[in-house]
Image 1 (cartoon, rainbow, N blue to C red):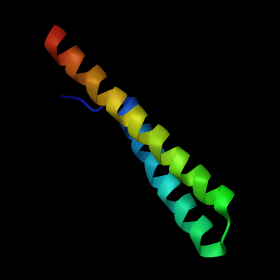
Image 2 (image 1 turned 120 degrees about the vertical axis):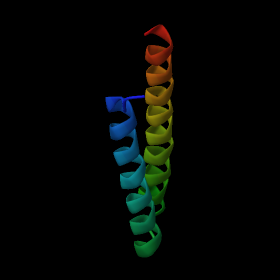
Image 3 (image 1 turned 30 degrees about the vertical axis):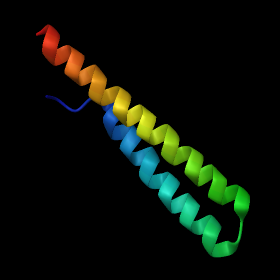
Image 4 (image 1 turned 60 degrees about the vertical axis):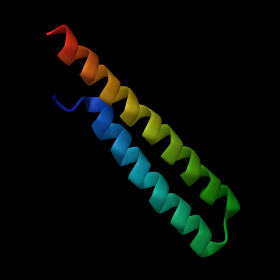
Length: 61
């Protein structure tokens, strides 16, 4: 199964969200922390979409 571009970009967004959340906690910025959590959720969703897309492609070929 090949890695879809959504899996890669979703993974990067998820990692970026973790960094943003940690930075928000460190400086006491609740908004930055919340944005980090949102980025993580978006990244996980995008990554899972890529996994499903890849699985469907594999089944069709």
